Image (cartoon, rainbow, N blue to C red):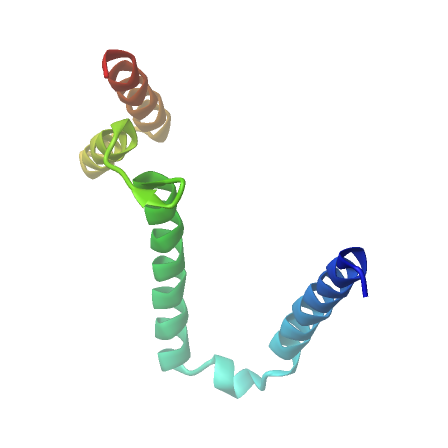
Length: 105
């Protein structure tokens, strides 16, 4: 098969896998989902996945770990959120910090 055909096999396979995952979610018994342990694990998995996405976006460039303006901007945003600043203020100030640091360095 050509590489074009393999691409379509991968696309169809990914679609079937997505469908099977969604179907599995519908056939899981409700008593299993109501277990407090399942709720706790689901919450931890969600936080871990979001942190992993954040870490990849904030600390890497082209597969290398970097510490640049994004890291400082995230730290500023974290402090502002901790101080209970309005979300729009957090976004604007963090973006301004990143922009100024990129302009300077």
